Amino acid sequence: MYLSKVVIDFRKPKSIYQIHQDLWTLFPNQDGKARSFLFRVEQQQAGVGATILMQSQIAPSIESEYIKLLGQREYSLPIHRYQRLRFLLVANPIKTIKDQRERQNKKGIIKSNRVPLIKEEDQQNWLKRKLQPCAQLDSLLIRPCPPLYFYKKGGENAKGYGGKIVPVAFEGVLIVQETDMFINQVKQGVGPAKAFGCGLLSIARI
Image (cartoon, rainbow, N blue to C red; front, side, top):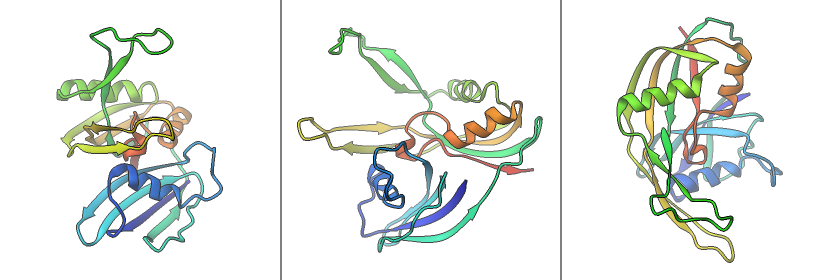
């Protein structure tokens, strides 16, 4: 895998979904393929741009006049069972509830909605479930993040829609329980809203 730090010029639009689209341009010839990268906005400053940490399966191609590569390294995951690791994760902890009006989709199934988990206890339990059985928490600090507002354009005959994501920063120490499963979790990311900068699990040795 590759870890890259890039900055997107302030002249480009900076909604979180537009940032995701900009990062897609670093991986040409990937049309129709699943997204092979995760990212997190580390800093966003007016007149400068957005600094992004990105994890990808292949090395990005930096050829845009609006995107500058600040650093890049290839890294492996030499992890062993019961290893303690420091971690940082910005995620979108949610729960799914059924539509209270019992509205149905075209297939006759009652629609469901994703709602953010607000209580810290619920957020902690959500993370524990996501990491099981590959890792367990040893220590944890939870910090709220500013909400993310977005608008996604629809297709030729579809309406666009807007929404809000309420991300949370999890930071602490975890203990690896199942090595292969944990490595896959790092590669795949944690939770939903990966197209909006959530899910990148950064780890470091203690």
